[in-house]
Image: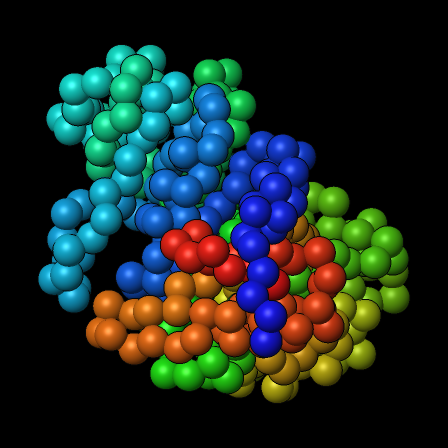
Length: 323
């Protein structure tokens, strides 16, 4: 297998990034290498603001107790940090009172390590991003698999995968493709969109050119009511998580707000939110020491991704490999 330079892939990645305002970086597991990718982006961007949908930048992982790489805010870039943890080397641009506490938008005038904290719900985060956008050219959302809802407020996505989620190349590629398919869930066709322009937060079905609210206050726990309502339906809209069990019972197309609501490979799905997956970053070594050949991992992942979408860039930020 021929080794190739990564420089071409890096150029193509940042060419794609130029076209998007909000980019989320989602790790497929804890310690996948997400922070390394965020730092990689910050070193190459200007006037970019990093926020999180969890907590990042702490020195030790709270679950695995291993040392974590710090989030390094490079000169000229911005971040939202807890007001009590504003480091030296930054200036405070604005402060926010949020459900997480008092947070500060800061701009670095030198490279500095920071700790970030979530702003609140995805809706509250999106509102705060409107203010952030007055000061930043781009917003980088530091996300995670358990908080994949970040894709619902993003224009573009970079996934971070690797041996932390699988013992061999085939295992890593298979698990990565499962999530890729969720992100690439297609938009509804125009025949459905006319009913979905102002999608409510309750389930409904479309029948005979009309929509009918399902007698359910959510999705979880209302499987029987939803299944009965979908009989002879043109499609069903479900605002919550759709499991394997539910998808197996519904025979019509299922529309969800975004791909993070899909927890099955069954069913015919459409998504109202369809962010562009611009890159998959790989990490061929896990914190437990599991290691695979980086060229083989990149090559196999790229080959399989090409069957889904030929425009996804596969890269390794730590090593000079690219396919």
